[in-house]
Length: 250
Image (cartoon, rainbow, N blue to C red):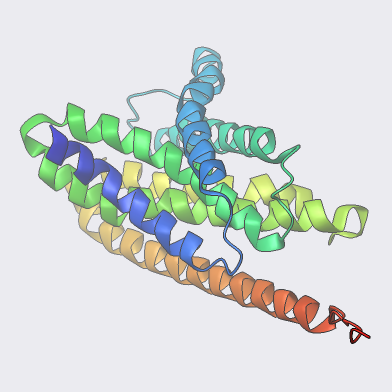
C-alpha cells in the first residue's frame, strides 16, 4: 500500500519541487502545504458543482457520442474542478501577507492544483486494483502534469489581477478562470472521445500527446519567465536599497 501511495503522490510532489525551486524568494513551507490541503478539499467542493449540473442534465456519466464527451469534459470536470480550485486559491491568498510577488501566484496555484491532482490520483490508483502500476504511469505522464499546467495559467492571471488591479490588461479576470477551463475541457474531451471507438483511439492519442507537449512547453516558458522577472525585481530592490552608514566612533 505504501508503494502504491508513493506512486500516486510522487508526480505531484516532483512538480511542486520544480516550481518551488524556481522561486528566488521561497514561500513558507507551511503555506505551500496548506495550499496542498486546500487543493485536496477542492475535490469535494467540485462535486457540489458537478452534482447539480448533472441533475439538471448538462452531462451524462456514460457518454455515447462526441457531444456527450464534450459535455462531461466541461460540465462534469473542467468547470466544477477549476472553479473549486479558484475558490480554494482565493481562500488561501485573500489575507496572506506572504503573497507579495507575482511569481507567488504560480507557486500557490500550483500547490492547490497539485493537491487536487494528488488526492484524485490516489483515488484512481487505489481503485484500479491490480492495474495500479499502469494507471499510475499513465496519470503521471498526462493527468497530474495537466492539473499542474492549468494551475500555472490560473496562478499567473491571478497574480496579474491582484497586483495590477484596475490597471490589469482587459480580460484578465476572464482569463484567470476561462483559460484553465478551456485547456482542461479540451484535454478531457480528447480523452473521452478517444474512448468512444478503436478507430478514434489511435489518432486522438497522438493528438493528446501533441496537445500535452505544447501545454507543458508553454507552462515551462511561463514559469521560467516569471521566475526570471521575480529574480530581476529582487536584485533591483537590493541594489536600490541604501547602504548602512556607520559614523566613525570619536
